[in-house]
Structure formats: C-alpha cells, structure tokens
Length: 604
Ligand SMILES: Nc1ncnc2c1ncn2[C@@H]1O[C@H](COP(=O)(O)OP(=O)(O)OP(=O)(O)O)[C@@H](O)[C@H]1O
Image 1 (spheres, protein in one colour):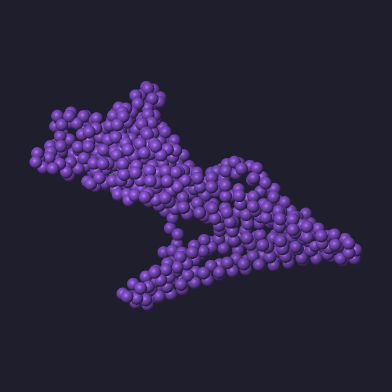
Image 2: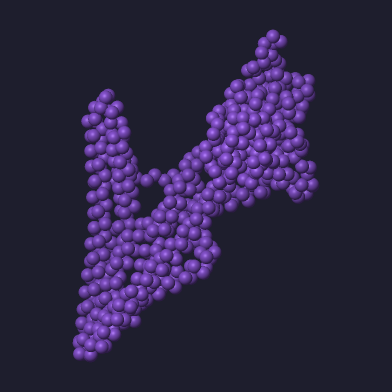
C-alpha cells in the first residue's frame, strides 16, 4: 500500500543535534527542576513497589489456603492486597500529576528557547529551502515533542518503573523463575523490530489519507452549489469515494501492523508464562518453592503484559519526539553559534575593535557579504556615518543598498570586514505590516511601557494627527485592551505608524530601507516628512526612494554592482562627473513641468 507520493520527504538542511548533545540539553533542563524530577522518580518507584504488593499477597493467600491456615491470616493478606492495590492507584495518580506539571514546564521552557533562537538566527543562515525546514521545526517538531512529552511520558514512565520493579521482584522470588520469564524476550524483540519498521510510514499514511478524505468531503459540501451548477456532483462524489477507499485501505493496513505486533506480544506472554509455570512445577516437585510463590511469580510476570505493550506502542512516539528534540536542539545550537560569529564581526564602536577607540556613529570597513545561494552581495564597502547625520544610499536595483543596510542592522554576519556601531540599529523595512490589534498595541510593539502621552507625542511628531484622534477615542490605550484599530488604515497610515513606533523606541541609529517604496505617490509626502523627523539628530542610513529625498541627506553613497562608486554631499556629487550627476540631470524637471513622478529609485 505504500504510496511513494505520500512518503515523508525530509530535506534536512539546518543542523540536527546528536544524541549526546540532546541528552545534555534535556539533562540541563531537568537539573533546573531537580526537586520535582526527584519527586517524580520517587513517586513512580513507590507506585511500582506498591503494585507488587497484590501479587505477593495473593501468593501468600494460596499458600495459606493450601496449608489450611486460619481465616484470620487469609483475611489479613486480603486486606494487605487491597491496601497495596488502592495505594498503587493513588500514588500513580499523584506521580502522574507531578510529572505532567513538570513536563508542561519543561516544554514551555524548551518552546521559548527554540522560538527565541529561531528569532535570533541571522536571515542569511536561513535561505529559502531552510526557511521551510525552520518553520516545520518550530511548529511540527515542537508539537511532536509536546504530544510525546505531555501524553506519552507519564504512561511510559509508569510502564518503565512497573517493568523494572516487577522484574526485580520476580528475581527476588526465585532467580530461576525470572530466567524462565526471559524466554519471552525474543518474541518481544522480533515483534518490536517488525512494528517499528512499518509503523512510522503506515500511521503517517493513515493521517495523510484521513486528512485528504476530510478535505474532499469539505470541498464537496462547501462547493456543492457551484458543482451542481457547472459540472454536476458526480465528479466530487467520485473523489470522496476514492479518498475514503484509500483512507480505509490505510487504516486496514494500520490495524494489520498493530495486530502483527499483538501476535508477537501474545506469543511472548504465552512462552514466558508457560516457561515460568513449567519451571515452577519442576521446582515445586523438588520441594524448593511453594505453589504460592509460583503463583506470585506468574502474577508478577502477568503484571508486565500491559506495561510492555504500552512501552512498545509508545516507542514510535518516543522515536518521533527524539528526532524532533534533536532538530530543535539543532536550532538552539545554530543560533548560539551564529550570535557568537556576529559578536565577533559587529563590535560596538568604542570597543577594543582595532585597539583604537572609535568615534560613535556607524563605521563600515572593507565589508564584503555574499549570499550563499547567488554568490551576489556587496564587495569591499567602506563608509563612515558620523553621529547625528544621515547618509543616503542610492543606486540601481540590485546594486547592493539593501544588503549593506541588512548587514549593518545585524541581519547578516559579514563574510569579511567589519561593521562598528555604537548602539543597536533600529531597522525600518519597506515591508508594510500592520499587526492585529489597536493603534496602541501597534505602537507599544517598539516600547511596551509607553504611556498614552508618549504615544501621542510620537504620533504628533511624525504628523499622524489622524491617529492621535483615534488613540484618544480608543480605550485601548489601556494595555490590556487589544481591539482592532477603530480607523481604517491604508498603506501610508501603516507606514506612518511604523515610523511612530520607531520614534517611540528612540534608537540612536536608524536604518530606513526604502520606507516609502510601497506607499504610493498619494502618501509619499506624509511618510517622507515623518522619516525626516525620525532621523533628525539620529545617525541614519537612508535607502532613498527618490533623488530629491537623497538630496536632503548630509551625505550620499552611490552604489553600483555591489560597490560604492561615489560618495559625498549632494553639492559635491553634482559638481563632479559621474552617475549621480548624470542621473540628476537626466531627471531634472522641466521648469513648467510638475515634479512628480521623477527621480524614482532606479538611480542613478
Ligand atoms: N536574499 C537574497 N539571496 C540571494 N541573493 C540576493 C538576496 N538579496 C539580494 N540578493 C542579490 O544581491 C545583490 C544586491 O541586492 P540588494 O537587494 O542589496 O540590492 P538593492 O540595491 O537593495 O536593490 P533594490 O533597490 O532592488 O532593493 C543583487 O545581485 C541581488 O540579486
């Protein structure tokens, strides 16, 4: 039944941690909760120990009855068996409760670590194919580990302890009987191996085909009217029939795989129990063991049936969780490695970088960066942006402006060379994004503690008076309220809010990556004015959308083919021959002509 199209395809691109590293991380997580981890171990051990009280008492009862001991002795053993059974249930429930709480906390910490690491990964580490891998890790793998940890761990841990304690108790009753029980092991091993070989693929196929059948049903129901009007419903029904049949096939195969395992397990139980009874019979004939003890041994062995089955069925989940964990730890380690590389290459100005105290602002030295996928980027860029000034980057599309901005912002670690900054740059990208929630929510992303007055002055500063009115009418300036913005937001307003957000964050360095590119002519002036306010008295790199905007900067760097080919003030560049002057003159507006939409970014 294997359908190659449905087999899992894993293009492993990001690193996967090895077993010992995963154990170290899990060990470190557990050490953070030493007390509870110890409590879980003690409680499960106690539950397993209480679990053997009943078989022990039943053996005593058999011996007491066989030797005609009085009723009071038998009643005593019955009472002890009952206490053991009730105690085992109560302590197991208690242990499971403590373990569930512990596992939930561990998972929450792991999830936070993984998300934080994924957010810290430099963009360059995650190219297109890898991005899908990263996404599947922070969703699918986290879910797999959570599922296994939350649901399966308590079952498996109790099964593990029950097996261990029962096996020890069996050996304590009589080592020969314990050895006889081992006759079941080959059946368990062979069955488990056969099961694991097939279970992953089969159960995954079951899930995929069930999802596909549900989708076909939903499509047919949702689109019933359209289907009836245009193509008739036969085709859709045929599709539902086909997918249902495929899903049933997969489920039947799943049941077969499980049944095969049951056959092996049952065979193991039969072989082991028969071996124990036969050995017990012989030992009893020799007079070395009582019937009661053989009964106890048989019951102890019988106690293993359920936990062994649970353990084998849970192995698939454990395997998935282990693989998931290895992939998650891979992301955490990659982020740690990347941030140490970044610290090496992007040092704060004033640090011991070249052994010389550097002035504040932005200093870029011999900076080369290559994208791994295209081998394109920027080459040997050197640039100084003195504090409190703006340098505009201009150049044709693909000349390297955004790449320089992203490396300075810390999104890409340099391939070689250095970026020296005296504060973490605030990166305002050209991508327009309005987050769900009120205007207050959107503004507080950059400054979570901002008061209403601070938000109002940031909005006023960037000329977003419309938002001030909305904010004052909006009780959502209260941080607990996250209703949608009460005013309609167009591209210009969204970008104005983004600039106000930057303003509230009050960074010393701003990087403005074509912040007006997508807002359209209608809103451009408002956004450009907001940006002009934002960069006042700040150190700014401005990827200029138009030469008129670039001309307002203190200095201008002209990019071509990944290099800076001209650098100077607007006046200096106009005075010297070169691409900037050519472009400016080529787009010089005719005296009678309105200035828009000239000198677009394809400059110079
Ligand atoms: N994510 C990426 N992966 C691979 N190559 C890239 C990537 N981004 C840009 N490049 C390449 O790097 C070079 C510089 O591109 P960059 O985006 O920095 O230019 P730009 O001047 O900002 O262009 P634009 O104005 O169109 O944004 C180009 O050759 C481009 O094809």
